[in-house]
Length: 122
Image (cartoon, rainbow, N blue to C red; front, top):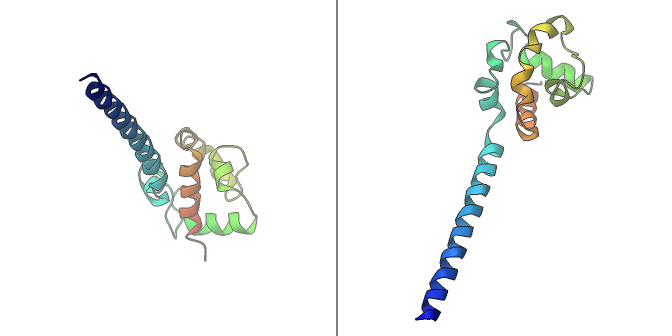
């Protein structure tokens, strides 16, 4: 009887540990699989000022992608406020208000956002 109790206890412990590992992996995978477009249109609220092919408040995604590629800039560094603006410095003060949002994003999210913006380069 003691052996049976011991076996059941061990199985329960192993089972609980596997569930916890799966839960942690699931959370990580969910964070990584969020697309740049989802961040751009959702959490980042970038779409309020930036459109793919026209300047609204901020420059278009096509212009941003083209200039950052040409000048070998880092969109991620800019969104972390670690580099100066290179597309339209006159709009920098307006963009500053959004750095609270982009600074709360992790590197994977910022890279996804950067990838989405670069998808508009011709």
